[in-house]
Structures are given as C-alpha cells and as structure tokens.
Length: 441
Image (cartoon, rainbow, N blue to C red; front, side, top):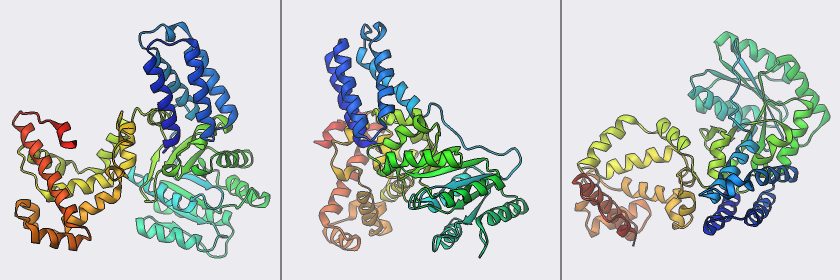
C-alpha cells in the first residue's frame, strides 16, 4: 500500500538527514521532489499545490531551520499535513440511537460493492453487532445469489425478494430487521456502469424512503482520480457520509486516498485490504501518514495481534521458549496465527523502520508462499518428527520433500533455521546474548 509514494518520500528525507543543517534552499529542493512524488502518485493537482504551500509555510520558519534536528522537524511538518490531507481524525461509522442503523452502499459496477457488503457485515459482527444484509441489486445477473452465498458462508442473514422494486425490498427488509432484532441493515444497491440519471434517481428514492444513517460509496482505490470524480458525482446527487476504498492493498500510488477528503469533503471510513472477507479495517489518517513516511504503525499491528493471536497459546509458547523446549508443532501453531493477521508484506509495513529494511530482504522473506511451503513441509512430518526433529535423516528428508512438493534442500533449510532459532532462545534463556547478526551472514 502506497509503496511507490512511500519510497520516493523516504528518499527525499534521507537526503535532508544527510545534510545536517538546512537552508531555505535545501527545503525548497526537497519540496519540489515531494510535489513531483505526489503528482506521480496521481494526487489531485490542487491538493498537491495546497499541501506543498502549507508545508513550505511551516518548514522554512526559524524554529525549524535553526532547530537541533531540522530534517526531523521538516518530516514532522510533512507528517502533520499528510494527516490533515487524509482527513484529520478517524471518521467512525454512525450508530442509530434506535436500531437498526441503516447503511446504504452505492458505487460503480466493478468496485467490489457486494463483496464489501459481506466484509462490512463481518466487521460489524466482530464488533458485537447483529447485521442483516439486503440484496437490493435487481439488475446485475447473479448479484442476489452472490450475496446469499456470502451470507451463508459467514452465517449472516440476507433479505431478498423476487420481482420487486429496490425501494420496496429495502423497506420490507427494515421491517424484517426490527422483527429479528438486527442492529444494522446493510443495503447492497445496484452498481452503475457510469453516472446514469435514471439509476441515480433510484438511489435518491431509496435514500428518501429509508433515511439511512450512512451512505457509503464503495470506490476502487486503484482507479485514482476516477474514484475521486465518482465520489464528487455521487455526493452531489445522493449525498455521501463516507467512503470505503477497496483494493487498497494493490494501490502503490495512493492518489485516491490522498485526494478524496480535500476534494469532496467526504471522509474515508474503511479500507479493503485484501480478497478475504475479514480484510476490512478502519481508516486512521494518522496511522496511514506514519506508514507512508516509513515510520510504521504499531497500534494497528498490536490490534491485529490481539484479534488473531490466542492468548493462552501465546503464554504456553512463552514458557516453552524460555525453557528452549518448543518444537516444530509449536512453530507451526505460531505460523498459522501469524497468517491470520494478514499478508506478511502488510505486517512489515507496520514495523517502525522496517519498511525500508524490508525492501533489502530477499523477496521470499516477505512472500506468503514461503509460509505455505513451510506449512507443507511440517504437515508432511510425523508427530514424532515434529516433536524431535533430530531423528530426521536423509531418507526421512526425501520422504518429507516428496510429501510436501518441495526439495530435500528446502527441508534442510527449514530444519537449520529452526535449530538456529532454538539455539538462540536457549542462549537468551541462560542469559548469554547470541551474535544475532552472525545468523544472517
């Protein structure tokens, strides 16, 4: 996410750090590069102009240029302005004082609206709510079937009707939501191929009848300024309360996220960060700015760990680690919990200072396929081999490699890394610090 922009901005600030004392000319040169990086990231031209102007106004002051760490002060100013451009504080979903909260989803076709409806329902249920999804897209073939299938997959109810008008379906669904005590009603309306007046009037009619507490545009982050234009059109005709940006994990530039709030006044509320149904997360402008500047996002990392890591298992593993008594079965268990937290490449972005270091690592170091290979190798072992890897000889290695679709060399590599890790844990538990860097030579 934002890899291209992040790389360029970090290079700009690395140059400033190397200069020590800064002059106004140094700051101007840096701002020219920042401006170019933002434009190349498909950020709206006016947003870039205003952003650079505000940074210049703050960054060339005496307090910054004469400070002990001027380069860090400039980065601080840029970080503050990035937060403002991204929306300032977090914009949460509204909750009705009298349930159900009605959430109306709108958007162009192909933006991932129906899948996002299911993701949002799961997100709300995890927060302790009871959602009901409504299949109000009566135009796209299989749209209703898709939502019903997703509902069954998640065990979340879906309301649908045959041969009825979308506004009537939504209104009837509201009665059903009250009957079953649903806390949220999620309306999956029909997507539009373009801004069509007749289709827009249908949305206006649904909004007027349902009086939703949230009207969320589902926009594809990878379409950049097209997503911003769509937000302007929908906001002008329907009135939006927020956006959910989908495919944010594949957006290396970030033009939509960095432009939409300033251009439309509509805040981003949630981000779609992957294909899985649990890949939806709240949008925090301050955390996103921190990630863009390579400063990590520790809070999001902690929240992911708390949500996905079994605390009892973690305590049991800690005891085993302290006694250097953990085995490959424990290692596999931890690996599977890490996988639940999301793609490794996204987790690396959240570790302060590691985003730039991570790019220097071999590709396979942050490739989720490597985790699958490790899993396959351990699954191909017998319970005894997992408990006592020392018994794995040449013939066992060949059998394990055949069973996992890998090579004996892959099995050797895993066993060597595991033994190094166990040896390191043993040294730590005995109070002797190992030469960690030596492990990577």
